[in-house]
Length: 217
Image 1: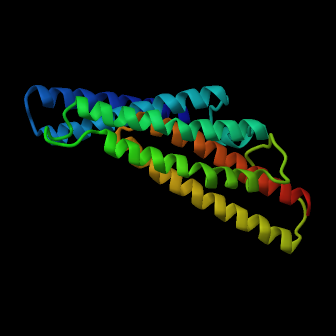
Image 2: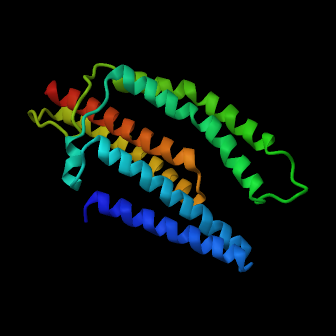
Image 3: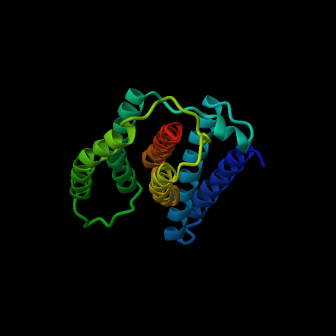
């Protein structure tokens, strides 16, 4: 199945889930379950629309076209990664504000500013290791680079070095995909967009680093 068809299918499922949630709320059927359906529906719609835009920008029609994507320039990777990360701050406020408006929290609950401020502090503290990773990943690499591994020689030492970076970035990508799935189920709009952007940049760092090593073999 083509990527565009998959995103359209997920978009339709998200719309159906929101309709079922609103109908369930109207007839007062399992309120807690209706909230989960509404969150999942919102998450699927946000994910689908974001992926549609991504597929359109990179001219992706078949799954093989993902290998034809090129990374951003170095300075664009640095700026976009930091912008995506800082978007989590307004995204976190929006997340709690919308849930407070929908009545997700008990009436006697404390203000949403407490969990919001705690998460903002964590986001700001993570800026330092985030940019340190960017510096190490972009050092001695060339961008833009294609999202595919170049083949050049079989020097064992360099091959092991490339394998290490491949595993390192694959682990980070898998972790981010796990967060993405969680955010989709949770209906966290901004975090979904941020996750997709960060995953793209992780692929950029991965292939930039590996291809730079392979050129030296």
